[in-house]
Amino acid sequence: APHTDAEVRIGKTSIRGISKTYGVSKSREPLAYVGSSGALEIAINKGNAARSLRAKVGQSVRVQTR
Image (cartoon, rainbow, N blue to C red; front, side, top):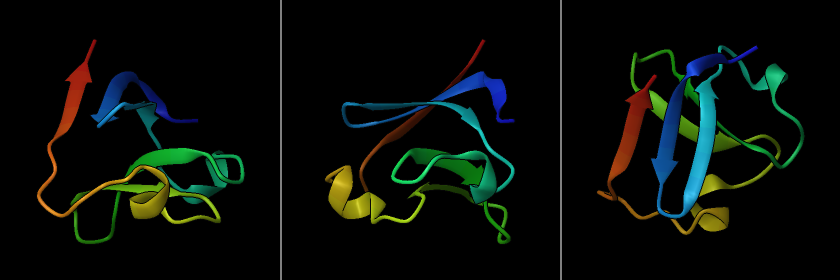
């Protein structure tokens, strides 16, 4: 399960939690996770996050913890 004490926002999309793997998200569901390079990554399981979320290079991403 994702670490639910965090919320990741990009544009109008809010992602609850930071997941450990793609396997914890449903198909076509956005997720945030820490990739192998150690960077926070935003993805869509079986989809294209940049297109679906209308994300652009350099766009702000907000991470809040509770």
